[in-house]
Image: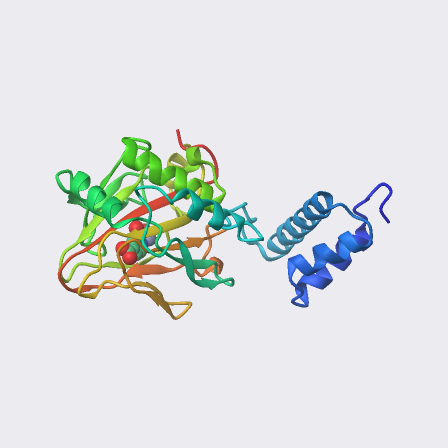
Length: 293
Ligand code: PD2
Ligand code: ZN
């Protein structure tokens, strides 16, 4: 096939057929390489075919088209290893960075050892004096308001506000293979006993009149990373009701989830369950489609 390596409609049909019968992308890639495709070109053909198929699928059903989203680790886990090697520094986490759980269909990954104990403690210390009652996005104007569904206190760092934020942001950008400039500043939240964050989506609701104003800066959110800064004695799990999945908050661990369109079909409804004893501290990183300047 491959003198000119044309992505013919037959090839596209074959790729879609393979993937939709559950064949792993890596296997399809290897089959293409076996018939003479270079790996890079085969990868691009696979990606563009899949994207075209998903766009057509969405159009046919009146759904929003999919966006590109961060996908951690690289196909071969290389990003994870790169981070782990780099963390062999004073900030190294005991045990190293690990994937503790991974779901594909809705994309959720639990990481162990993303932050060191010292980084967690320092973030809490820097944030503590600046906490104010958390707000939610106000749907009419795109502004924010206090809301009973979110009873935590919180603050935002500017992106790269200090050396600690910069180091963590660089690590996240490498891990998620997503530009640092597309990230919002870190948000730190403190939940006291009984505080919670009721289930919600992190993307901005396209049907709300305030959303276009919010999207002017960086476009939609496409992924979230919630990092646990302490281990509450009881309660405070991050829950994904549609996946019947919950993540226990453990200091230094984190849960990542991505959503390729602002639609419930991403099944990324999630919440912070009530803290039953003590406090829970988290830092959240939201990733946008484009530069968030
Ligand atoms: O603190 C959490 O577990 C949590 C749950 C849901 C945080 C967020 N959402 C968030 O920061 O968006
Ligand atoms: Zn959330």
